[in-house]
Amino acid sequence: LICIDFTYLRLDGQTKSEERGDLLAKFSEAKADYFIFLLSTRAGGLGLNLQTADTV
Image (cartoon, rainbow, N blue to C red; front, side, top):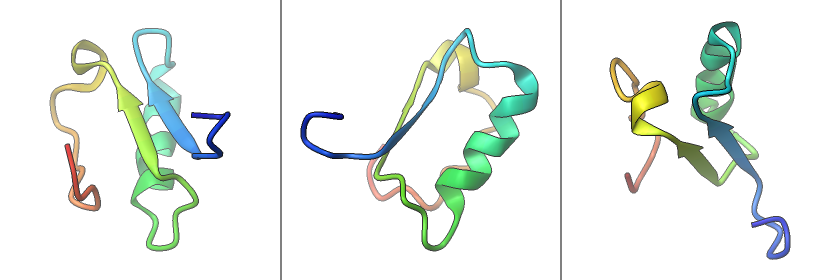
């Protein structure tokens, strides 16, 4: 993704719980610079609001 210049966020099992909300807020911003949000369903599968995503 870096090679093709896509900006992205990542949420997985190593993501601290206090960072999780920040990542979701960054991705959900109206003028977000992030095109892709990589996440593990086990790390963030419940209670995520991804309404701003056009493809899941």
